[in-house]
Amino acid sequence: MEPLPPVQAGYIRFVLFPETKTWLLTPGMVIEWCGCDNEKISHIQIKRQKIYIDIHNSVSHAVRENLQAHGRCSVAENGNEQLKWHFIRLGVGRNHGLNVGQLKKMMKRIEAGPLGKISINNTYTLIGLREDFVRETVEKLSRMRINGIASQARLAQEREVGRKEAQFHRPKPNPGHDAPDGNRPQPKPKR
Image 1: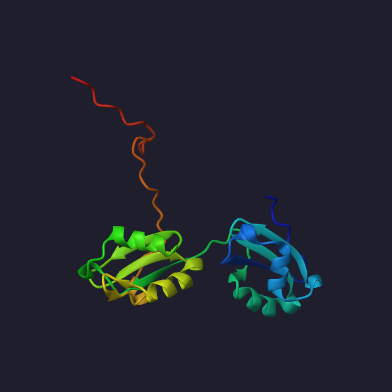
Image 2: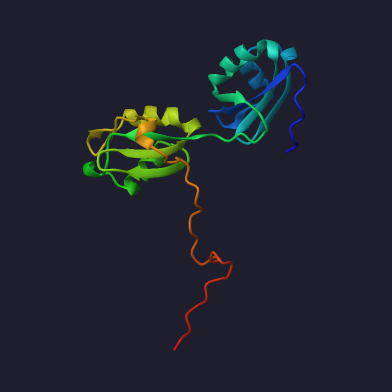
């Protein structure tokens, strides 16, 4: 895809992370979402899971409110905007019979999106989710019962999370591939 052009004077660039799949969207649909005259929009570019929109400063506040109804919208600064990760909290934990396998199956069934760090404690569980999946996932989980107990799903508070990061950073180990020092593991000699 071609790089983004520079923002014209008098315009502001928004980046929208839509809740719908971007391959279903057209620039015409995005213009409708903006709810302003076509003359107030100078550029629209749909990239993977982001939409970049250049809007005239005079209507930027109203357009941003309109776009918020379709996903997370923020001011684009350098074209490398990343979605933030947040923890959601379930009121079900290890004492209630919850385990990682059961949790992952449940999250896959409700289409919770990519999972971050998972911390199953005795009485509650923290699950890292990308911010574009948080609201929908909390709504679905709050209606569920896990092992016969109401899930009590909600966004985790900062005091519950501490300094933990919700995103999972480490790559998963891939046995049989290169070892960390760059050498392939050597087979044991036969005797």
